[in-house]
Image (cartoon, rainbow over all chains, first blue to last red; front, side, top):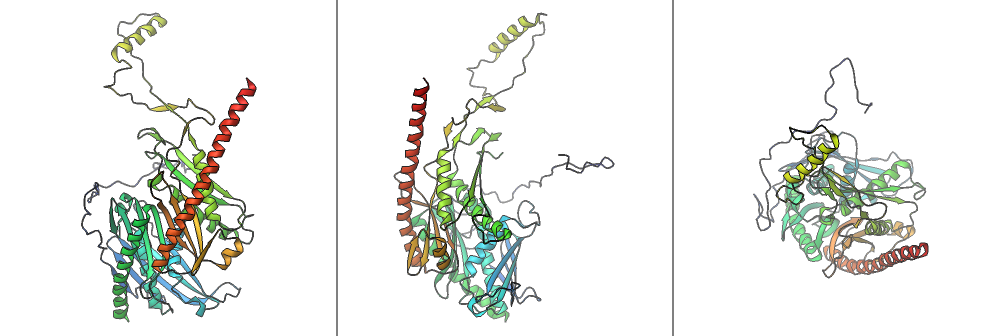
Length: 256
Length: 260
């Protein structure tokens, strides 16, 4: 308590402050039996993808899906700072949330949420990049989340952005990695849940795969889901990933 | 506190467990294990119902802290097993709501203090009977009638998940890898299953860890196979925990008998 700057010469503001609570325009009053608001359960939000956003980076991409906005920059392959010899290259993923990206202000220090998101994206990307062709090198992928709409949405859009940026940078890959999030709400599968929808859900699953080679690179599941539901979610996500792949490939082709 | 209580899990890694890692790498491993454990265990689907003390005023915060002293491989299975055992053991202290009431005084009160008090109490009893359920007492604070290890068992102790890590070396897989085996086979699939009595198994968490890829069909097959392993682990762990319960109550009874 004594730590607070009690400056006797000045008028001190309150010790604690809270962000204002706004009346949410879209009230997610959902009850069992109601259908999803504004979308079909198997619809994902439209994706806006722009490669080549940042000129000074080797490759970059900007992804926007309704409320999730992620900018990604790729630097590399460049020499590893490590003196030790690595016969395979390293993929380094760093994620940063802008302080205004979530409902509550996030301090600009690096915290556990940044790291867990970075690990999830790294997990999804690493099997696709041909690191064995890049000894002693590092590829840096920097993601900045300008606005976040739930963790699952961030992982999915982040993977798409990073993969596009890697392709834009000309890094050799086995295929583009696409990712889709899903949630089980009531008895239905809702794809691409927003933050509010993910909180209603009893379980969420994010699948990252390479549609070109038909392999799954990462699965991230949390919450309660039966085995049948898991299987259905994975199939639904896989289908969507193929659609997203088409969109991304088109955007890259148009950009070049 | 948040209504309904909160569960916070943290994992601390002693440097003795990972002597070859720098302190920043150690912090990273700690953060990874913490987020994995926390996201699985504190998910709302597993939330116990008896962590509230006073509705919308006070609730319990459950801190689950795991300390890794030595790691010889397969740390994730061990983490979840330890967490399950600890949560099985947890008891929530019983509380009693306490209400503060200011005594009212009659206008024409007598001077004698003691008589006043008696009259007032009598007065109060007439105005607001304890049996009057139309006016619910608003408890503002609580007291603990229990101490030490008494209290009610944490709700939903059957549901805490059991994790199994399948180390994948396509097309096969193996369990319980030692440190060298983990280094040789870096691709892992972590499955956390929760078994309710009589109901089919439910997946509480699934992660693919490490570099590598799987075909969707292979992944589904692994999930099925993983369920069987997890079920065996669950049965064995439960047997051990029940044994421990029995041993404790028996020992306590014997000790009581001795001291009589």
